[in-house]
Image (spheres, rainbow, N blue to C red):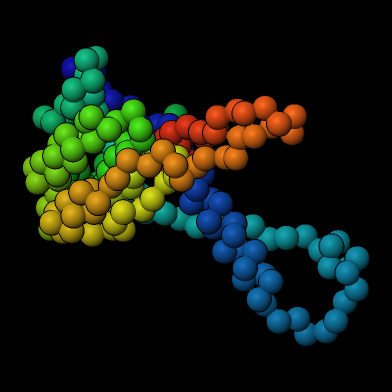
Length: 200
């Protein structure tokens, strides 16, 4: 198996660290008291000192997948190379994490087109939560139709989330716009449609 390369991820985190360091340097400079007052033009003429920070350990989270998109779970640190500016970096610690907490969002379509299957959506959503959600996980529930409704904010209670899902109702009226034209023609109400993107 070829070695997975994480140079782009490391480079991005290194750049983020540099930006944070730069922001910290600016904060120190702005907070530092001055012994005497100077004009604005004199302040601008002064050179700004760069703050340099040595970082000993950087933490990276990543997934490695095969050509079919399946996770590769048998990697060791010897299978990996981490490069910074093309230079190999030492991997001091390595662990395969498989039990990290999840944060989930359940979106349930309660638009008019789902009237026949809404109950099935609720059932499948509840079963999914039963199978997936653990004590350390959090989930929320939203229904969307002509409106977007937060049914339940973050919780780890499957029962509370199921109750929230079961409260979803078909709504094809909430988004109606008055439809009579200025010419007096009798035009039916216009629906905004299903607000999927707003919900996401």
